[in-house]
Image (cartoon, rainbow, N blue to C red; front, side):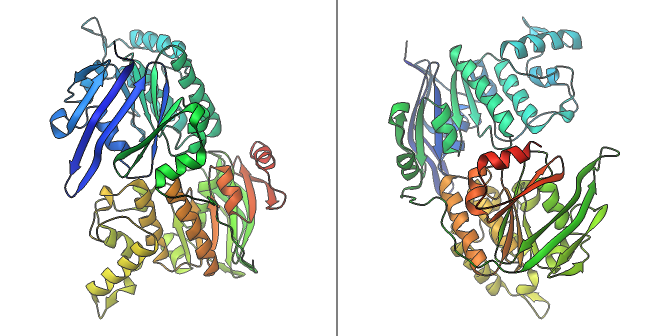
Length: 503
């Protein structure tokens, strides 16, 4: 019997013009939590799709072994039957089904007998959820669940197959702190019962806190593996990015000027729940050359505040002033005309044209820049897009590459290029480093400082408190759609911010 429940040996996967993974060897021991980490584009998703059967056995070179035996998967169902459960990063549920139905939708049977009785399905779900200490109601419809609850339901779905190995791909990206703690508790409980976990994340803190070993990929190759007693954060970061990052949060020294933006008494009705507001009576200001942080837990109204300023929500009450003059912002085009641009939290859903190329995504925010006498100047369009690619270090062969084929970090840089192409004076950043690697994060922090030097003022939302505290000059804290406090950089601590988040 092999000491490894799961192995890959010399896996190579080629796409047109690029080798996504190059002779990658992974080993997962029984009952361990193995971390898998690397920059966007390092090959993590590709190797997971090989292990999970999304890429068929005849589409790559090398071997996958389960309990020491070679396996050849033609589909994810083959992987499930071999004891490999997979929970993807993207939320993938059926909103019109119940929790119980979502969990067992792939195998509504007992001993080759199809079971469609809701009562029987619910009983099976109750047992499964209790065994794994997952707090969900089996008869609740999926559409009423929070993002965190849907993530747990997807984990329950994978566990319903009784896997020996559970792969979690970036499971904490959209979770609140409370949901993350709950997830960690479930993962540790699974480990105690002998289940092996492959935990894929960009967050070094999660690697240090949760895993027993970590494997680092870079440019499609395995760079190193460390056991927990060997963990060194600086060494892991260097292996990930291929260089030392001496200062994750680069220092900024700028002169903060007068008020550039002010909102007064901003209230927005909830679009679905009667007599409830998304945000209520918000009043705050932004100064020139300042990064203002908006802190709060998931559901506090942070994103809704930025979206309202950008004209995506219709305000019930309130006024917006730019340079002390009231402006009317009814939609995003009004916001752009007034010098406001926004990097949305959901880059795939709202920020990018996924089936368009890099050039078209960048230029769509300001076509006037390249239109000459009623025609688009193709040469100028290419030049402008190329300049943004160089400035933001977007990794692609050229500006014609489709955005859908880029890594998450490079997609985020395209979003930034697009909004900067509109020449904003005020930039709204909603989770600007969500789901991207540590190297790309550092590059975005450097860019934020450069934008401030150029006179752009920024409002930033982030669920990562260390990031928010390092990059912002002042903090407005929200809870339940209301402002619960304003804190200067000098007085801000994680504890003081979290206390106001919970008021």
